[in-house]
Length: 363
Ligand code: ADP
Ligand code: MG
Image (cartoon, rainbow, N blue to C red; front, side, top):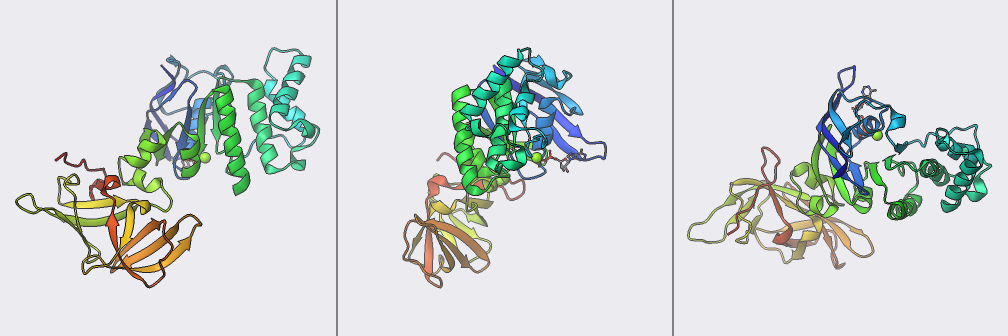
């Protein structure tokens, strides 16, 4: 049974902005679901509707199959960490965490003990008397989390909790969040615009785009089987290469050939990559190429390389076509002429009109 389920949630703001368009999603009990998408796609709006801070224009929300769309926030047994942490600047860390327990039916002593316990577990024990302005960004982030954990609601909503931190700290807090989730197993909706955060933290991912769900699934499903061009382009760094062209089908079972629209490039297709239509876009990830000797119909020039330590990112061009590929080898230099070989097992084909993935024939 899903812990959280939405049915056709739509939201149009009074000024006419449609922020959500018939969103259906499920979060399973104890799951960490990463809700990801570009800035402005509706993530915060959806979280605020879950929390009861905002109302959907249409649709319903169920917690454990109970319709809760009209319940006030404090009856939903959930806690939210806001992007800016929403700490009170004039209150100490201790009091900020204590605020989470305001509505709890505990004695003052029990509340204070609970604050101490959570503060200790998050490494905040020595900072309890400080004001938010006297601690670092990472520590503020932990205070916001501590306030949530002290309350111990059964659903956690986290709105871009790491986006205000610098890169190193973000990595560290990512691990801490994963560890917290492993320990407490709370049903968690984690919002981020960062594909890497979504991939590394989410047990499943829901990718939103302009208020609609593009695809839901495990990180591997979204990376390996993107439903459309948007999903394919959203995940992966550097981005997937999209090569527009058409397929030249040959009679008598001869190998079909893909001809690029933008360059004098012909790639013979293996028998298992036979899209049912002529015009197609090949989606090939940078790591799915190998550089080989160039030939008349497969000749690129290396424009630039980027050394990443364990690999080399190469930017190649042939006429109007630009390709990025990632190589384990380092004997490649700008101005070199190379050809490409494709690892077809990981290639996707897309319809240029609809952007949807084209199923490949099984032959
Ligand atoms: P995200 O969190 O994914 O960046 P938001 O949910 O904050 O996106 O916003 C989704 C869309 O709704 C954006 O176009 C934003 O400008 C718009 N929006 C958000 N809040 C309001 C509001 N109160 N009134 C009008 N438009 C809003
Ligand atoms: Mg937001």
